[in-house]
Length: 273
Ligand code: KIV
Image (cartoon, rainbow, N blue to C red; front, side, top):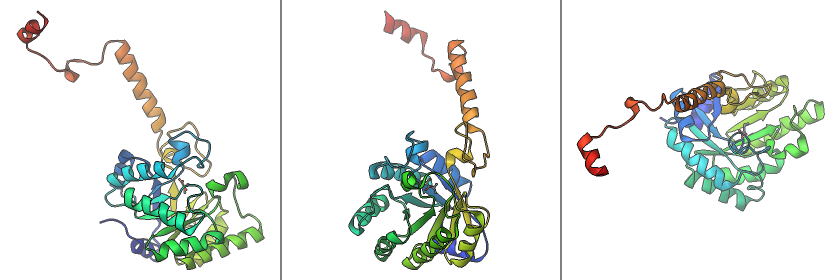
């Protein structure tokens, strides 16, 4: 059974933390789903960790739809949320068109968009038409050139604004709220004031759930952001495996008979005659 919005509400009510992880392809979605992660995010962070850009801005709706479809094919039980890319939700019509593609072609069960009260009418509009919306406050990567990659809302006025934005997004119908790079005490206070679950990333332990980027969690790159904990060193493991493979090819130890098909000697002789 796939996780539902109601399940997430119930988890918050019961004080059960919600683990969320990004996924960008079929294999990673299958593994995360098997591990029991209840919610996957096809994040536009794919622009950085999959495509090698220095921000999420170049990610297109076509990119999102293609990756979302692969993730959905791999995820039987997790609720799959897809990011609406940069500038695809500046009007209600654009937002509907983008959400339609992500849900109908990509197959996601919900979309995520960034921003505070200025996106409230968009959230309301999407929700009215049946699109579950996850909101995103704090450091919002699509505004990285305005904000800088740093902890947000450290001063009282900004913190107050973030709380008001969170309440407005909840009232607009968002089913959950990502809090990224927000001081832990503020994130905890916001989480206590909201009925919908908060999902933190670099926002401390007081959020109702946590989201991490696949590559950060698994150590795919040499470094990870401060807020990430490396649960494995998969990048190093892959490098070791590839070095061993290359050395075996160079040393003529791969392939062996075990990886090869034989042929009747007479058949071969006739073919070569
Ligand atoms: O794109 C993404 O991966 C995200 C998470 C960092 C929350 O938005």
